[in-house]
Amino acid sequence: SEDQVRQLQKMEAIGQLTGGVAHDFNNLLTIIRSSAELLSRRELPRDKQKKYIDAIAETADRAAKLTSQLLAFARRQALKPEVFNAATKVGSVADMLRTVVGSRVDLVVDPICASCFVEVDASQFETALVNMAVNARDAMNGEGRITIAIEAAGSVPARRGHAAAKGDFVKVSVTDTGSGMASDQLERIFEPFFTTKEVGKGTGLGLSQVYGFTKQSGGEIDVDSRLGEGTTFSLYLPRTKAPNAVDALLPIEKFAAAE
Ligand code: ADP
Image (cartoon, rainbow, N blue to C red; front, side, top):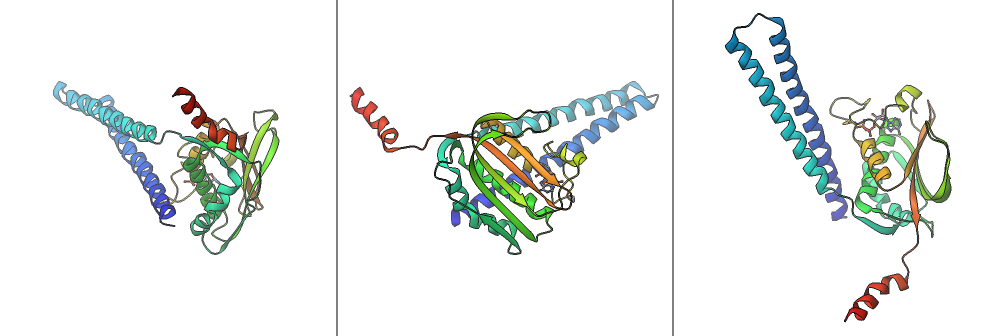
């Protein structure tokens, strides 16, 4: 739909913005680094010294401004939690995800789980799905199968550095039949700017978004990957009660009582 196309364009713009900021930031660091080198290496007259010191101070100011712009942008993307059925939501964006992964990738979704309600930011949830689908597509060179499953789960399995944890979750998993990852790669995938993709193809920020969204929503992530076989990313989001007619009427009752 038109909305989904706009959402895709917005996400592409965010990707370009963050990639651009990273590039600009690197340029500024290069200026600071080389000015510092010039200062330390040579016997410089006082006025030359001052020139390089000023360059360092000015460049640091520009870098700080860039960071504060990025933070202001991130704040605008503040989370707006709402209650929805995760399975229904995945079903409703399945066609958009199919456009993203291309026609040579088989994308399978089982969009039925009557009790799979979550209370999270819906657009961040969609962005996380897109980011995981793009990674799955890239890991399969554009050909293969992606399976998205949604189910209620009573616990998160033990993960790197974490014991298993009991709870009441909706588990959303994205499985691909792609390259899989070795353990040294797995250790770094959630780091901002970590990417194994060519320059211009990857920003290394996709999984940072997935991680940030999941943790801020009170959830956990599990990754299961086998080299040469594929990968499953599982998001465990806190499960919530379905909004029912009584809850829906509550604000009206309160309003009536106040009058
Ligand atoms: P980007 O996609 O821009 O590289 P991400 O943060 O989304 O940034 O991913 C970081 C890295 O994690 C990828 O470059 C890739 O090496 C690895 N990765 C993520 N998802 C998968 C996957 N499904 N299969 C194999 N490797 C993956």
